[in-house]
Length: 461
Image 1: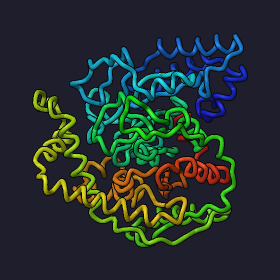
Image 2: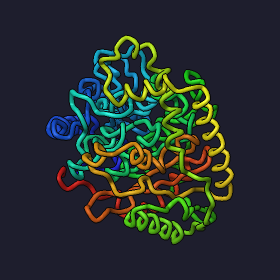
Image 3: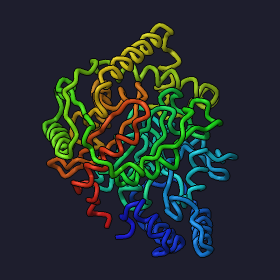
Image 4: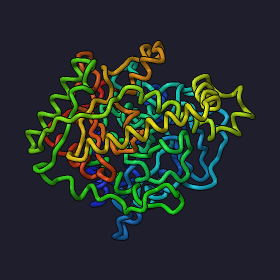
């Protein structure tokens, strides 16, 4: 099935002329038209733009030129990136006519590399909380009753259901890793500042990360190499060159060390714990050394993340919220109002907790190349479960994702098996700053010996 082929593999076929970009793009546009009314992954399908880009790719190849490493490959992006002439809705009904006049740096880099942009993908309101009409919640292709993940649900659903070969999304507290985990995909949250946020709708300025969702570590590496690197238009981006992860994927793991902390696995579902143990065993079999660590206490970190996110969201929405309060959904409005009410002392306490944890975590990871953690402490939740969760359970849901966002460290999520109900189970590897290449290499070597990432939802052939 061509639509489930790997992104990197598809790029190779297009570059050597085995596939034509226009034919491939038309096939995916047809698949979107047939299936997306049920899946609800897309907000805007930019068919004319996609076909124009595909024709340019075919014409370039006919003249002996390859546009770049993503020559003619159809992808899509979360609907929070500016694309000149296209609405950047950020999942908010009040932004349905917010037509962008500029193009985000990430989009420009993708198009310069030859990518064909199929359109924008559904997200929860303002990158937080509820999916609002029109369109509502994307449908997890593994099971319509399963939660599709956090705000990047549409981005994961589109890749998992074969509507595009990869997507670019954002992760503030887990929104790349959670959707990737529950849809059987590979998602990379780069370290903070590794990918430009210029032209990206803001939820929380010091917590927002931009990264890829793909079917494999190889595909994620290609996307990361394209979108990463310093950007003068984003003063928070790091003055570092783009990654070269694809080049180093095949290197052996011997000499690398990965860590785990048994204390962090307390009160974790046995099926999730079994996947964690299996991943550790497989990495060790590939030649990496297993090291037991003592990590700083995770308790209270999700609550600290929430306070910081709330304060920064209140600032980002200050003008809009004052004018359009009644047009905001309950979850996002609640976040903004809590952020506006937060005292300086309470905010400073959360910031102190963040600094203390980050410093202690980096010290704890100094002797290893990656930390192995689950994405969730329990099995993939169902939509009805999430809707009924109280505040304590919601915070526990983010036990393993929010701390990594607070620390700004890179993390990669990938499928490591399935639970007894048939839902995908993902694990994550966390590294020190600027170690995205190593994390991708570890994930790739694991995927070379397993097939979890090659299994697709049977209901969407």
